[in-house]
Length: 288
Length: 263
Image 1 (cartoon, one colour):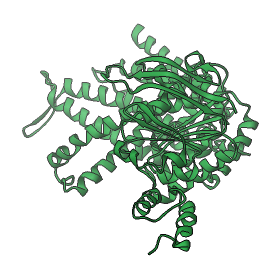
Image 2 (cartoon, chains in turn purple, blue):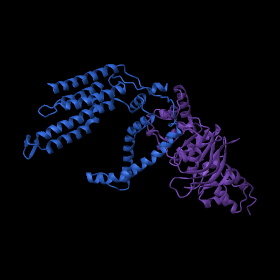
Image 3 (cartoon, helix red, strand yellow):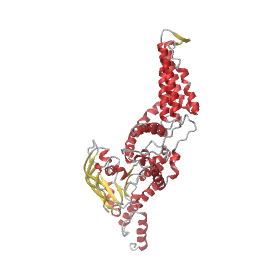
């Protein structure tokens, strides 16, 4: 598949900032793939997302060198709102994603389609589909401000899904949610992956990235230090030095290997852990 | 199906008037209040006192009398404070009333009546409009009248934000209480707790505003072109009649004012 998003030698700094938030980044992201973006706080994850979505420099200003292409066209060449139909963006804070002018969840989800002048009958159909997909049908008549954080985040996802973008940029959607809310949000993201959407997800919960992503991008001080297969990256203990968390099962796998337990490879998901560590335990060839 | 659910049905025909008609009534009523306030009888603007009776009568006819009383209580308190302050503090040569050390001068009483009843009249008619009209009806009417959708959004979100900021303020105060800060008690204790809460409240709103702006952009708010609306305003059918009555009443007040002036 071809690259749907391309960054060529991109360097970006915010206005009045002394340092560049993103330095010399070149990436090619393919259509239909799920990319997990990890890195410690301040490493440039959100800035990378803002560049892809075109918020930087259009909204934040600042200076940009290099080019960011979405579907082969520089983000700077898109008309206002045009990118909204190509890239959906979900933010960290569910509360601030409420438009503040709608009385019900249904109207809130429909807001984007109203802005694009979609006929009312079609809006109804698409909103019903989106609220069903995100599991908030029962909340459709509620006031958006009366929802819990998890419900508000699902509504935010529904508000973007309803626009049917090909690319979804999701910036730490679960940082303010409880485990139940996190699980429900990831169920929705998994659903989008199954529908072959290109997903770029910033997330500190690396176990979830290991579970769902196809590839991983690791950022450190504005630079991409690793990009590629999640199995190779999320099992690499050297990333701990850059403040990047690894999945708990990968840490266990590394410790077992150091203790002399020969593992086929370092597991990064629970499922892999059960299989790989289980196999090593069954053979016991290492046990004296 | 959803379009039906979003419709606002009002059984009371005055309540159901189109927001633009209500706004016309509000403007004309306010203008009449000012005109009547300019007619002085022995220096007193007495006509604006019975004129105020129209507001509760209109509210009763609209079926929102109790709601109006609840919403209007604070305005009444402010108007009373202004009346008392003006009456007792503005001095002149003629004493209108005296009781012990307290004296009300004629000039003070005249100013007190004029200012307090002008406030009651104008605030009262606005209260009627806001109590009989949902925010989204006003916003929709503004857009229909040709206002840019961004301006209508600012208007609407400001109205909603008052409520949201009130809730946020309560959350911050509860958090402060949980940390042992005294928030209950006399006016000074409350003020001491309230003012520091303004910083996180305002800063939080500013930070939230940036993300909200980006959210709006993500939802195509900046797209120029025709927008659709799930919610449609429906006129009650009595708009022309209501507007005619309001215009006729204003004309009568205006003619009366000219006659008083000429004669």
